Image (cartoon, rainbow, N blue to C red; front, top):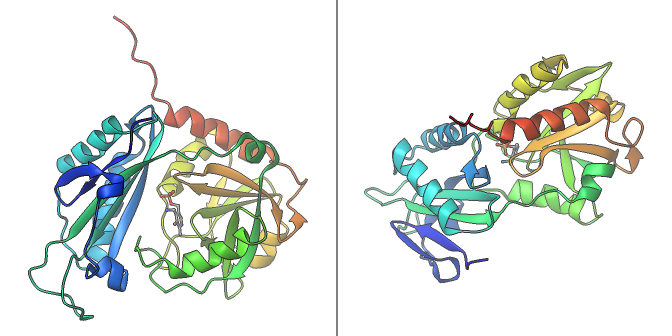
Length: 287
Ligand code: PMP
């Protein structure tokens, strides 16, 4: 594998040589937004949707977009070509740039744009076969969780709680209702129906949220968006997580209790298979 090369504000440099100022507002305030774009066989998956969400995040925090659609796309393509292996994730971060420390937005500051590639962290076969474990925690994050902000301390603390007990994810509950997980969206299956909480300011609308509409329709699973109560989560037949890196993953242990039969269920199996098909572009017919 070649050494990783990243992009930092106009230049492509080896990742371990990239440097930003200690006065960067990303470092000082967590003042920035980010994206994680999965790529299979060096082809980005759902690129338009990820770039559109990056645009929404930038607008939500009052930052201009430093690049247009074709420049972002070219940057992603160059990183995928310059890095290994074939399956990668592209991380993009834009901060409000370097300025004298003051909470208010600085004037005339160049945003810092950083992007790098990391190998796609495919879930180990063991997790695919037996499912993941998760714990629940009250959702202590801020009320603008729909913005993909780099200020992630709430998510970091939530995730650490599951890491400490050897679980793979922390599912968050606010006032008795399911929101999402520390870095994934959460779905439950009850009475054969796939349920997902409606998207609002308390959840990040994952790129897989809209994709699941298509996948559920393709495999004939009824999907309903409505609030999901904590008690429903606890007696769900299946629990699923979705994210760029987890794709679709079954949770089979919640707070040390088996979910449903305690192994990945039929709705998971159907949706995971559909996801694998969706991410693999159809072969062009040879002429
Ligand atoms: N919610 C949160 C809080 C996340 O961090 C993520 C991962 N970015 C998701 C949901 C899933 O989003 P996506 O499907 O775009 O990876």
